[in-house]
Image (tube, rainbow over all chains, first blue to last red; front, top):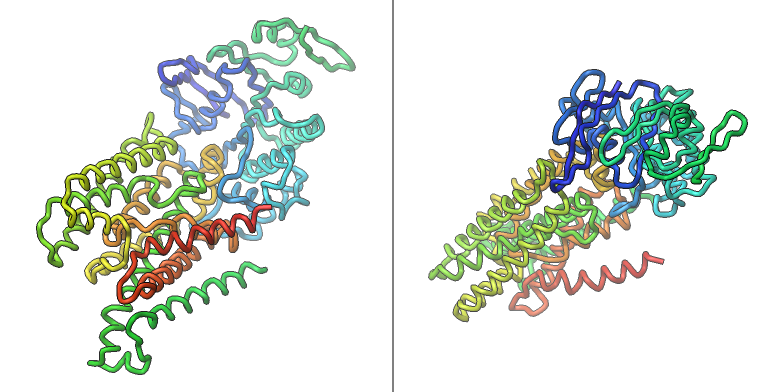
Length: 254
Length: 324
């Protein structure tokens, strides 16, 4: 379980995160939503231990995240950034995913048969095994995003934080990735923490909603409550209508 | 082509070049006289050629590996060993020494090297002290600080040159145009252990360098201790370069192109890239130095002129050839 306790963070005297506390339980599917600039990515980065908060602390299974060795932390939490763009080295898909095994490697960094099996398992799970030899620069946005996810999964951390990963994807690629996350959550018991603007997806998978507005926790609610109390409208300051079909609720701007 | 075959070609070509360079020069060395004590061939081989080739090899190797490290750490393909201002600091140190010293003895070269070393060490700590924001190492700030320091030191050098007499000004220019002629035997005693240690330390970070080049967020997620890795790498690379260029003066281009060429032809994996860049970087500089020693014989050209004259067109050729 991850506990976020009274986190505050500011940049150049502008308050980005204002005293937020959260609990994320094992096996939960959580969506962090809110307007642009609300501090969603920042709170996710702080939760992942990437950014250090000005005050407050994060505990993983009751241990302060800053006191945990980085490699040990990587075995508990993994983080998928918005996009991966290659820079000096144009990795092959397999090598890029293999980097996910870093927390488990010894000093010499040898990728053994066991590691390779795990790497291939996650490549198959994300349906990118056929891209094994391809270089990242030759992949489409959707393929790149799956590679990005596969590499994080290869860390075998039970908490996966994903930062707006489907923003640039076409409907099919988005659909595939969304299904993958549900599968990971339901079958593999991963805790998925998703920063997203895809409200319909978050509703469809019945995730728990963490609503952030102006750096503060605005609401913390189940899908049903979000709809019943029309929290979306207050969060985004706009009117929404809800369409119900076959037990599924779809939200669209009014 | 298989990576192992390419590796074999690169390594054997490097060994061949380095060995051949021992026999290239104004004085033709007869191979049978080398181990005969008292002959002129024996003297030149062990007192001139061998130290020169070794210092060229180490210098080229360290420059190439340093460039490689900075390119990965800053995720910037045009980063060079001098991007963070170490060369600027060394040059300024040397310039100040030349301006204030009166002697022209062998001590002058030693003093110049020491002053250059002092200049670069000051720069190393100065740049590093700018790099922390909120206790977090900031790559962009580090890079900008380095660039700013480079401009600042070159302005100060021009300032000194403006007031220096013609002789001092000439000596300053000679230092800034890096050359292997100024490497003394006692520099070698420092260079060999330092470069060996630097290589071992850098190599031990090969996995981290791979992941650091993927970006800070991914590196954090994978569990790389970024601050620790970058701090160790920064100081290792900077001190190694300081040790090398305080003796030679800044030698450009090796540190930028060799890692690229090796990455294009051999592998992007640092496990292979680090040693192969060192070897080929060393061989490249030794080759350039052979030209520098012979092209206008009996006079010598500073090797840094040759590295860029050969290196730049070759590099452009490669880029055109590989980019479709």
